[in-house]
Image (cartoon, rainbow, N blue to C red):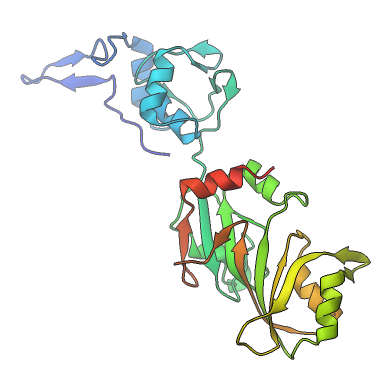
Length: 280
C-alpha cells in the first residue's frame, strides 16, 4: 500500500509562522470533521478511501471519488461522502453493499529455469522461483499450478486467491502445452497408447494431443493436456519406462513464453487478466 499523506486535513504553516486549520476541501466544499483530521494525521497506516477502492479493482481513483460523492460507499456500516476521507486496512469498506479487499491484485508470469523450487521457503539454500520475482510486488504472491523443481517454463504467481482457486480446479479446462525431451526415442506404439488414454495410478489420463516435434529427434515430443494432477506429464512417461531429460511448459491457459526469456518475468496485461477471469 502507498504512504498516507500526513498533511491532508492537518495544520499548515502560514507565511508569518502562524498556523491555521483547513476548514474544507476546496474540491468538494465538504467540511472535514476535527476528529477525522486528528486521527488520519497521526496514523500512517491509513490510506485514502478512493485508493482503497481502486486497489480492490472496482475502478480508478478518479471514478471512486464520483462514487463516494454519490453515496455508494460505506465504511463500517456508515455512508461516507467526504473527499479525502481515510480508512484503516482493517475497516469494513463496502461498495454497493459488496465488501472490498484493499490489497491490489497482482499477476506475474515467470519463465522458470530448471532447478528452481516453487515452494515458498528457501530451505537449506535451495533456489526458489519466488526469489526471481522478489522485486515484482510487495504483496505475498503464490504460485498457481506449481511446476516441480526439475521442470521449467511458464509459472503464474498471484495474490488473487479466488482466481487461483478457479485455475487449480480440475474442471476449469486450462490448456497446457509441454515440450518434452526423453532419454530415448518414443516408440510409435507408446505414442498411440498415450493418445488413446493411459492409466496412471489406475486412473486414465486423457491428452488432447501428442506428437513428435518437427525437425527434431524422436525423443522430443509436444504434449497438450488439461489435467491438474501433480507431475502428471512425468508420470505418464515413467509409466512407459521413459526418463524425462527436459520438461518445458510453453503454454499455460493461453499465456505463452513470447518475449519472455528464461529466468525473466512480466506482469500480465489487462486483457490477459480479463481472459483468466472468464474461466469458471
